[in-house]
Image (cartoon, rainbow, N blue to C red; front, side):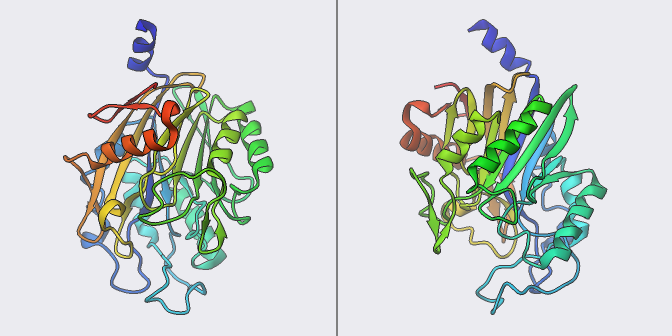
Amino acid sequence: MLLLLLLAANPALTIRGTGDVMLGTSDPPGYLPPNDGNTSLADVADWLRDADVTFINLEGPLCDEGETHKCRSKGTCYAFRVPTRYGAHLADAGVDVASVANNHVGDYGEACRRSTEKTLDALGIVWSGPPGSVATLERKGLQIAVAAFHTSGSTNDVNDLAAAKALVKAAAAKHDIVVVSFHGGAEGAGADHVPKGKELYLGENRGDLRTFTHGVIDAGADLVIGHGPHVLRGMELYQGRLIAYSLGNFATYGRFSLGGASGVGAVLHVDLAADGAFLSGRILPTVQVDKGLPRRDPGAKAVELIRKLSMSDFGQSAPKIGADGTIGPP
């Protein structure tokens, strides 16, 4: 026990991650935040910076022009085009790596996908999303790989488990730590539980997430971070590795429904050993105010939500979550 406490106090690597981030869209007009987004992340930036590696799911392309062919009516369809200058807000807040594997990255076509990648590259933010892509970075002498998946053949695909396991196995052979992110699962207030088997949403296969997460850990992943349902979900420990099934909405301005649980988010802090084993963690609770500005939540609603969902869905394999948000072994 003393050795575990010493390791947790001196982890080899600290990672912080969030769920969905969409700082505002220029199309349709009227959905950009105050101060052109310069202060949107101010209240939570210290939480993002305070880690060796900080991850986000970038929900929508960074692009300044072009039209979407996704929507017949912009009033009832959601397509995002985030100004490229907003990428600097992410870098300033300490973001190191982004998932571009989700159902909004292609909202404005291939030109905006390339614009997103070019913008992130210029800012020094590594990314993963297209088929076969793995983001890589080095911290504290450790080689780290991040592979991002979505339920689509235009990205690393949650629903192609054989290819996912092969990608993770190859990354694990060349890196000390492998992180997998996935954008999957049903959406909305009723999607806070992780079912057994395949999830459907509007007729679309959104993945068998228990099978996927266990499979990529068996293949060599050390941490799995989920997003996509727009609400928080529970956490599980599998083979000594932590799975967060959804970190919900984190910074989603203007066009997201943020009532009830949809407005509650979290920054997940994880301490890993040099071999990738989970040592300890913490839930840093957030809430969105106004039309989608993230703030620290003194009421810590996320902590209680994740604790209850974890116990309900995963029982004895759920991590122990304290009232202060600390995460430990069952």
